[in-house]
Length: 291
Image (cartoon, rainbow, N blue to C red):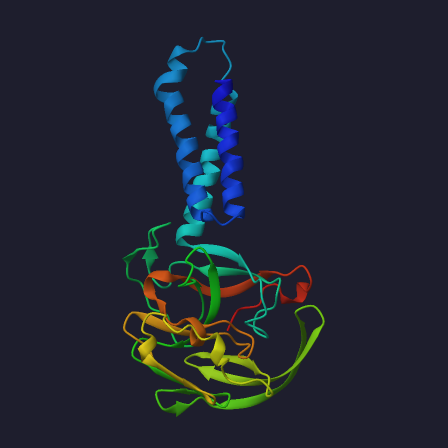
């Protein structure tokens, strides 16, 4: 039984290392740990406790499994079907979301999905234009990205000279002032912000007037449905295919988004970001809803 205890902890440590190295997702790690603790607990109930003497103490590994299993089960169910926490790692969603924001993501609003497989089994709702959405990066599904939904299936999205146009209608802009931040160490950026309304969401987007609307040399030449997009020096135009979404960062000139790597398929959706629950650098952001 001591050997089993060492195997248990070795698997836990290995799982944590793999998660840290992004070899497997945290959801899969939780599932494997849940299965391991559950199996040990059931093995004890079905076999091991019958062979123990009345005064013989419960093996440590069984005690671990019995104690951890309910906690892991609750965490697994909560983050799989209700809410999941994420941390914002970049400034692509400035000024809406800042680096270091810890956010909560609604996992059921866009449909109930099987954990790990991310396959929708119950259709609850669909993403709406203007939602801030977490999704699996199409080029590497092990990575989670967060951007704003700009184009729904069937929409035509254009971005010309810093003006967003959806289905032929320019999105109204209202100046909101300057926004200053430091990017890439000592790179000082001064951006112009605008109020922008997409669907039910009125939010602030930012541009840097001296930068082009799209960096043509960074556009992936062969992303799926690439023929649905056209590019030139003034911007781009994309027709969103069925079952896909077009995503942009609110920090329009410093965001790696759909204009560069293409559309987000429905199967890659994780959920809608709705709340900032922590930011160690600015506690005043705690509790803010995400529009």
